[in-house]
Amino acid sequence: MNHAGSTSHETKSGQRVLAVYRALRRAILEGALRPSLKLPEDSIGEQLGVSRTLVREAFGRLAIEGLLELKPNRGAFVANPSLEEARDVFEVRNALERQVVANLAGRLTPQQIATLEHHVKLENDSQGRDGPESIRLAGEFHIVLAQMTGNDLLNRYVQEVSSRCSLILAIYGRPHSSECAVSEHRQLIEALTSGDTVKAETVMHHHLESVANRALLERRPKQDLSSLLAPFARSEGLTPS
Amino acid sequence: MNHAGSTSHETKSGQRVLAVYRALRRAILEGALRPSLKLPEDSIGEQLGVSRTLVREAFGRLAIEGLLELKPNRGAFVANPSLEEARDVFEVRNALERQVVANLAGRLTPQQIATLEHHVKLENDSQGRDGPESIRLAGEFHIVLAQMTGNDLLNRYVQEVSSRCSLILAIYGRPHSSECAVSEHRQLIEALTSGDTVKAETVMHHHLESVANRALLERRPKQDLSSLLAPFARSEGLTPS
DNA sequence: CGCCTTAGAATTGCATACAATAGCATTTGG
DNA sequence: CCAAATGCTATTGTATGCAATTCTAAGGCG
Image (tube, rainbow over all chains, first blue to last red; front, side, top):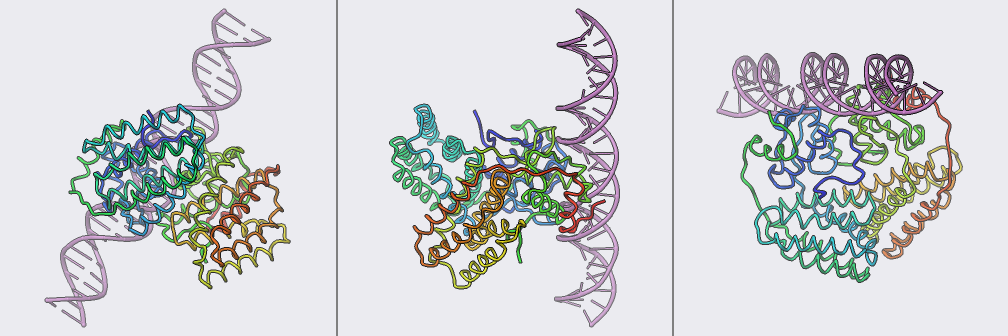
């Protein structure tokens, strides 16, 4: 009921620019826009039915989040993080999620536990299918955890590093290795519920490391911007020209 | 040689928008623009000698960093973080800086140690004076540490939380309590140099906690935008109309 | 034949103009 | 006299236009 990129305090100004931001974000994270692909302001705006102004604003935000690289006077390119950057991201992610579990261990309400278990069940159900659904759910688990801390900043940072990790896995990882994630998520819930902080941190650490260690290659074919972006535009209520 | 707000990969587009961003950032952090003050786009633009477009872009970035609050169709206001938000920020800062010292303990080069000691000496020297210099240096110490990790993302996050902390201290903290910081910084350097990770993490934790615990009230008088912003504009090479 | 120069096209950087929305004051009806 | 409705004003949201920069490529020169 609260998909992808909307935190609770989302005080961002416009509505349309948010839609552009989300459309591009999803397009990048789901791999539709391959790393290093150039995104001209004109084309994107035309595809999404908005002016360059809004596209630029969205670009700025995506660049800050590390999903785009903005080269001065050159334009915007889908980020293509190096292995070293990837390592950095996972390190920070580990530090942040360690704080998340430290906050949550022994403090989860029965309702929150139920929510988490429900989420894992969804993960398990969608595991067989090939779609990006399974990947999305696995990542969302960590977002949900972060939200439960009630710490908005921690929540935002976790979301950001999760995004970057998704991009990294889209580049370096193999798609169908999310099997282990489910059991690891279950272990984590158990440790959190029992209030064993050290165990929870350990499980989280191992879990993230196992995710990080999926560093294999994978490529995708290229298509034209038009057909790539159309579905994302439509799903955000934007009208391509 | 690499002051305030510029990381190594700073791939941000324009140069002028960066100047606007930095001018406003400094103005906020040094307390010239008080929390909750409204910043109309055209007034700011006029004062800084740029159009609303650039001001807006800078606003967006500052809002993401938590220094501004953007209310839809209402405008931008200098952030006025609540005590709860402040707590959240310090918690995240603690998690991040813990990672910093974990990275650095036992791995500092003699040159880096010298740099840190030099910095602390500067802190010590500027301690007597009343200016914001002392505060700035105390904060910068943590930035320098983060930079030494070589982890760009960690570096950026530490910088962000440091900014927010500065704002928080400007609101809740008393100005002249940076005395203890110097000795604590010295302790930290020693622990890092000796490679005692646990000790370093402990010292950092206590240090941050002592900083966080300075939660007293302090207010400032109000002036007009013109005289408030002029010096910041000039120092960034902008030409007020 | 290859490299440097240079004109053209395309794209970004920035400013301005227009449209939409929120806040405020006045007015109007009860 | 007060409350609700309405027009006005100020400010934000968005689009467009112009200037500046970069890329491309054709042409000239060594």
